[in-house]
Image (cartoon, rainbow over all chains, first blue to last red; front, side):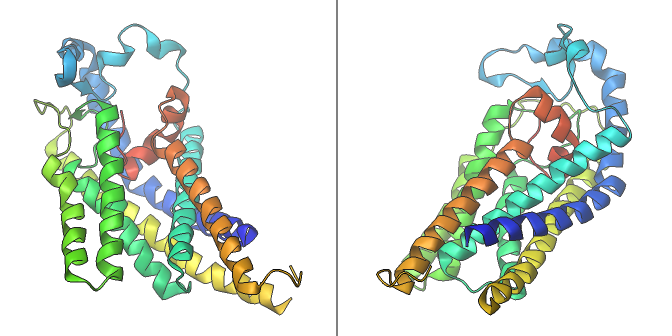
Length: 246
Length: 58
């Protein structure tokens, strides 16, 4: 069964990742490149922002902060063009394999039969937990947007994703009213706590561009979950039938 | 797989636990690497994916 988990995760993730990487290439990546032109145009004078100190530290994405001490020069990054496309695609495929593995972990742990329809429902819930709910607190950002310290945002993001996933599972699996009420409370909790935000919103990127990017990137994540889930629901029964036939 | 001493339900439960554990480890490790790892090189390589899939970046 472990082998089947590996095979299905890799197959579904590879295929879904390739499809979504192609989507990203024509949707989100062009906006990121455009945002980087705004960012680099204003990167030089913006250095003084960064050092508010303490918890209120603002980090301008890509801004002068980290790069000010000449770190930028010896730092590796993929060259624009083909190399950048390849690395982005590889990262998307890796994420898709990860999503596929998480879907399988959830469905196997819950003891669900795995078919296309059930996998798609799990995939939709995966998107609500990992995309929509964290995105309500931390809107997906273009490079150049101002935001709170990365570590605090990542923690809130992970906490929100886990709480939403647990809440959805409780709500959908248990009949008792108090458990459903608990589920709603668990889903709401991270939003009551509140996501970490930069004290002063100072974005270099035009609002229209940022807004377009926010909805696009959520849509792309939804596509990645759904395509991955559909393929998991296709490959798992197929490999199971083959294993039984042997 | 056909050892008589192990009942099939027990076998399938422990198989399932192993499969779930393997899937969890792979899923968490991959998503952590592509979406969250702090290493500058990993960040730069996965940069457009992190932004494009709504992960917190920078």
